[in-house]
Length: 106
Image (tube, rainbow, N blue to C red):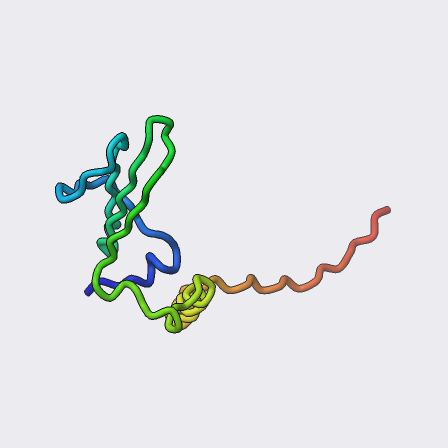
C-alpha cells in the first residue's frame, strides 16, 4: 500500500527518470523526476540559461484531496509527532541533577 503522508509532510524523494510519452516544448530540454515513495512524476522544461520554464506534475490516484480536506504541513507533522510519541520514539528531556553543594575555598 502506498502512503502519501511522508511526501506531504516533508517533500518528495526524487530520482531521475524517463517518460517516453513526453516531449518538451521547442527549445527546451526535458528533465523527468519520479518520487520513489509515491510515484509522482515531475516534468520540467529547462532553457539554455538553466531556467525552469515549465513544470508539470502527474500525481498518482488518491494523492490529491479536495481543498477543504487538505491538511497543512504543520498538521501533518503534528499527527506524525503524536504517532512517534505513542510508539515511544520521542526523546525525553534529561532528568535534572540534584543541586551540588558549593565547597568553600581557603
